[in-house]
Length: 62
Picture 1 (cartoon, rainbow, N blue to C red):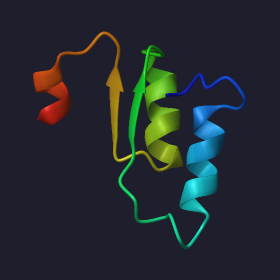
Picture 2: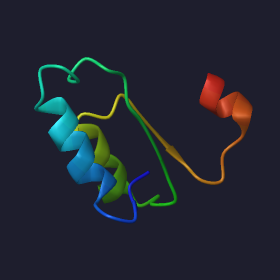
Picture 3: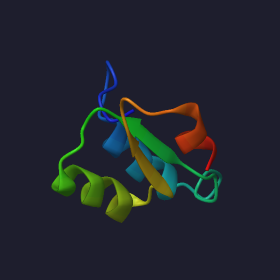
């Protein structure tokens, strides 16, 4: 999620992508932030997919 209690999910994603041990782990951003610039920021930071809340389980599995 983008809005974590202690830090930004986007910042965490950037740290994961910068760490050799974690950079290849697939990441899906699941968040209420649905503005186009938020989606682009998540994807450009390295998210493999970006799903906004509310979502259906079928959408997540697709």
